[in-house]
Image (cartoon, rainbow, N blue to C red; front, side, top):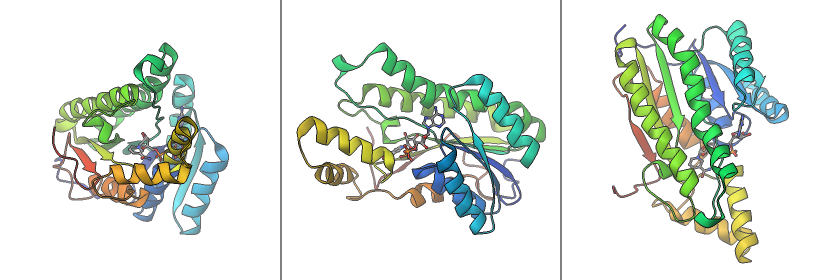
Length: 264
Ligand code: NAD
């Protein structure tokens, strides 16, 4: 099947990790409003149920699939459950991620293992499991949610930056491997987005510096060349574009969404 031949997300099955909160919830809602059946994967059933309820209230189709994406056995069960209920997964959005900031000397073996497992190993595990089916059917769309930290370094962000660079690199190689099989893989790389992740980052800055959390949050927004937070819906719109009917020729890209980080 040609890469240019695609129907977009309508009538297809999508799986979104970290779909209970923030960017993942916005992506799941956007895919469902575009007509996809969406498997909502994450660790916390309550937040997944909230995303599902908002999708179903808009006449969309969603399935709650509680799963820790770092647990290989759970991933197998999660895919089996999702595919038996919704059909073969054709769109994979690896969104679940953890952030962490600390000066290098305060980072540990446990920290790097924890970040690698969620931000790199889980996207690889899911892509590895779904790739053969996508190839057999001649269609697949993989979108990995990376970060501006996939494009440049940030002080006190060694581990997060390393994992997001790894994710962008993995995306390029998935793209190269999938190109003749009807599979595209792209990364979306937002600057600071107003989500629970940023709330936690502002709280950490506040605890460490004594600055009010609201001030810390405002400073984070100003780090975006855009001068404001990116919204979860803006990230979701980029994902929709990459899985859209006319985006089959876009492959291996790493799309920055922050208002214009200068190239390194
Ligand atoms: P968030 O904390 O709201 O979302 C992360 C989601 O991942 C949560 O729902 C969490 O439960 C889930 N998750 C984490 N570990 C998991 C695991 N082991 N198994 C299953 N689910 C797990 O934050 P967000 O800002 O919406 O982040 C979503 C993605 O966007 C992340 O990959 C993050 O790195 C990336 N990102 C965020 C920002 C930002 O400023 N918020 C900027 C660039 C990139």
